[in-house]
Length: 98
Image (tube, rainbow, N blue to C red; front, side, top):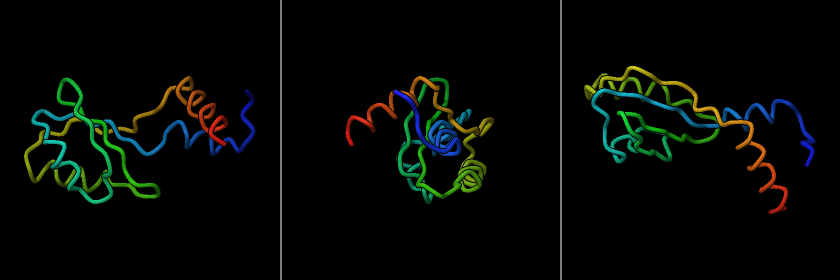
């Protein structure tokens, strides 16, 4: 399989629309989903959450504001980058589905 497309598409596929968030007092998944443009939230160990947001949105500021207002103890928020291996699997799956 050879990727045939713009490098920007590959970069977007790798970075995607997910954030990895770490908090001392993490909220419930439901509370995270109540933040505008957050479409999926997953609780992880050690006070972390993985959050997926709607395409062409950037909810980081809203997440930070909610964390401060609700005392979640936010200490990390960063893009959740997909490994190149995962990108390969996603691209392969898309090719097979087409």
